[in-house]
Image (tube, rainbow, N blue to C red; front, top):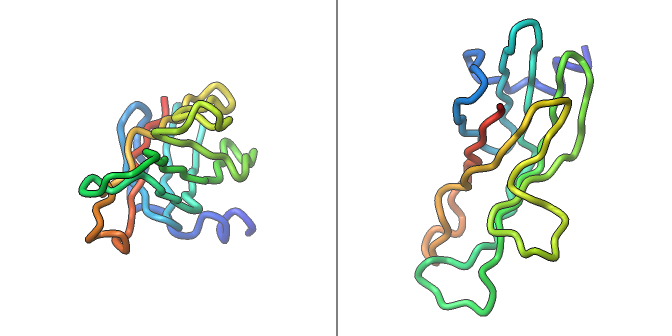
Length: 126
């Protein structure tokens, strides 16, 4: 029953590996790889990238936090980042249980006029 509550906001279809997918905060995607089932729930998106119509001292980064479940084994509070400073210990991809999870984009890119727009993380699992 805990699995159902943790991953309650699933997308309608089961996706395949190697295909990009988009998630908003709180959404879950399910993937199937042979006999393996994968659920990934997006917990939060923190986007501090410099808006494209502003001059900034620092470029900033976009960090997503997610929980993942592979065949009932849970991996919690994992993070991926795009445009990360080399001093941060977070990258745009991570390997979990032989699956490579990549963050390819966070959309929309910030502008000074759209700072309250809901963000989506574009990800792929291989």
